[in-house]
Length: 246
Image 1 (cartoon, rainbow, N blue to C red):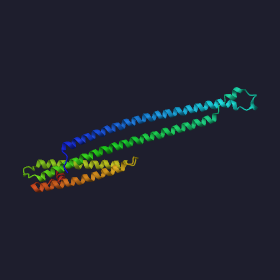
Image 2: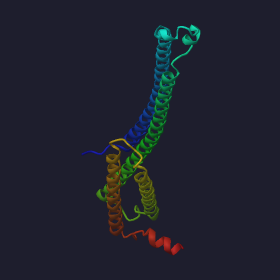
Image 3: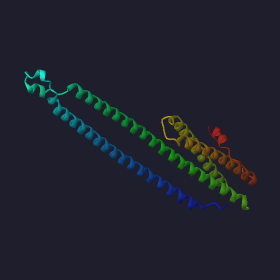
C-alpha cells in the first residue's frame, strides 16, 4: 500500500479541523434556535392555558346566577351574582402554577445537562484530533526510518545532530502521550455525568488509539537502536542523560 505524501496529510488534517469547527458552530446555532423555539412554545402554551382558564372562569360566572336557589329569593340578588366559586378557581390556579414550576425546573435541568454533554463531546473531538496528529507523526517517523534502512548511507550522514533531532522528536511524542493519558483519566471520572449512548465506546476507541500509539513508539525506538548499532553511533538514553545532568 502506497503511503500518502506529507503535505497531503497536513492538508487533510487542516481541512478536518476546519470542518470540525464549522460543525461545532452549527451545533451552537442549532442549540440557540432550539432554545428560542422552546421558549416560544412555552409562551404559547402558557397563553393557551391562561386563555382556557379565563374562558372557564367567565363561563362559570355566567352560569352561577342561574343556579341560585329560590329559597333565598328574599336576599339581594347582587350578592348572589357577585359570589364566584373561589375554592374551585384557587385550586385550578394552584395546579397550574405547580405544573408551570415543575416544567420550568425540568427545562433548566435539561439545559444544564445538555451544556455539560456538549462540552464533553467537544473535548473528546479535540482529543481525537490530537491522537490522529500523533499517529501521523509516528507514520512519518516510521517512513523516515524505512528510507534510512533502504539507502546505503555513510557514517558521516548519521551525524550526532540528526540523532539529537530524533531523540527530541521521541521525547516530544512521549510527553504528548503522557498528557493525553492524564486528560483521558479526567474524562473517565467525568463520564458518569454524560447520558449519550456512544460516549463509552468513543472512550474505548481513544484508549485503543493510545495503546496503538505506544506500540508504534516502541517500534520507533527499536528502529532507532538498530540504526545506531548499524552505523556505530551510541544509542541515546534520555533517562541516563537526565540523571547525569541532575
